[in-house]
Image 1 (cartoon, rainbow over the protein chains, first blue to last red):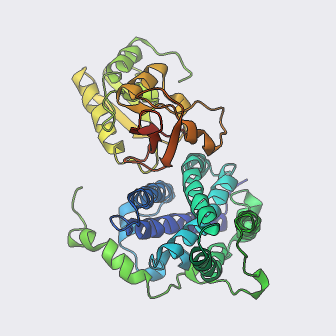
Image 2 (cartoon, rainbow over the protein chains, first blue to last red):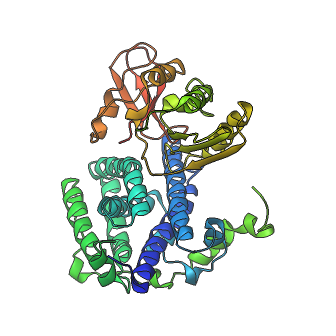
Length: 256
Length: 166
């Protein structure tokens, strides 16, 4: 079908959501570099950071083809209110339980999102979705192993993980904040929509968390942390951007 | 590569077989399977398409440059080297020669798969040093994005594997 302006705006919004999530969470993950509780974990979070930044670049390239600015410009010169990322990804890394649970919730959502996008009508997006799927598989595998192991570990571990799950769950629901273009995205075959994704995600994480011995907060009692997709962020995002762009801003025209 | 290569393209392919992966110098980029298009419609003109192993691979730009330099070296002047996701790389695209080359570098070659595989396959990766399958996967993340960390219970050595990717 022929795309109208609204379809293109919806597609761009979708791409910005995904790219910004990956850029910001990639940056947060990189904050574990040198600080991981054991060497393997240090490497794991650093590797996932590298994957996510690489994936965000591929999505910014697609946006560039659609007429947006160069990837570096888009990534490094916007203020917090111009970011379409969900609030979940901007929270500081906190304790390891928080980072692991965020990683578990986010990567399962991302794996399902790109799975859904493997048959989008937008060809370049279809290609990267097929590529990312194989990479994210290792991320969800890593998260699953830790959630499972800690769920059958000491009482303290179980308690802390359950506490982190309760704390992160409302933030994770913010991933699925509907866009203004849900109908256009769905009718055009660009994307089956955030509501569909949330429902697939809930099934997935409910199944896994229950099998690991955790309880899942009740959806109807939970207020989703919306706002991020529309540029409303927590006070955590702007300092992150200031730090991330510090070197870039010294000389924005520098050749790298 | 579906279309048969013409003579010039064959020569380019042979030249690119001399371009080593910057992170694993025993394997060429052709054997790694990342050269997805070689086109030379006329003298001096070469259009090459590469596909990344991992989206975040930091060696990508270096590889583009290495390909560019190699084409200059063999006399091409109108060169385009692009990286594209049109063909998505997977580890089945590594040639048999490439798998040998990985082993030579001390890396366990990735298991072959038919598109879908469970990550459990990582747990019995054969040790590249003694060949034993009595090994343990320590971490799916290693020193580069494409490697995992393992331990051999037979010869008591730590080793790295090239991760299977579908």
